[in-house]
Amino acid sequence: MNSEKKVRREAQLARKAETIKAFASEIRMQNETEMTIDGHPYVLLLNYRQGFQIEKLQERFSQILTKYDYIVGDWGYDQLRLHGFYEVGSKKGSPSQNIDRLEDYLYEYCNFGCAYFVLQNLDVQKPEPIPASAKKKSANRKARERRYKDKAYLEERVYPLKKKRPRKFKPARANNVKKLGKKRHFTIRQKG
Image (cartoon, rainbow, N blue to C red; front, side, top):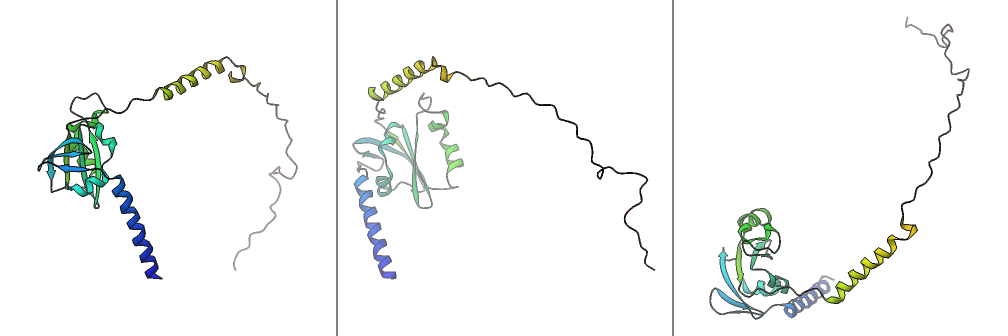
């Protein structure tokens, strides 16, 4: 039984390795600090505690990272995590995504003292613009909203409030009324 599980697990790991290789990026080192990733030039600016490993970077690199000026790779629990940063003073992204906030990122989101590296993207790719067909859809939606504004069923409905009926006074029942002069129904016995 255990041998069958072991064989299935090895087959599963082999399939996973094949898919990782299929989607892996191509990295060519030109020297110790310069490289190309999928044909785009990058420079290794900082390699803290030997955090830069080509094999893991090939597996984890994604095309979405080509829009950033800097890419930071940090290690935690034997996993490489990549995060993009923009140039100082860039209008892209939020101020926390500027490279001058790298130290804050390392303190807040990374393991203390973890190995990391910083790559500079020399050929920043602009993200593809939104296709015109997607823009038309939003324009059509706005036109529909304008048409529906005039419809009566979208107006705010006012419902009449029900008037509260006055409560009828119910006289207290005879058994609920306490009479002060009546004797109690129990007796107190003393231990003797």
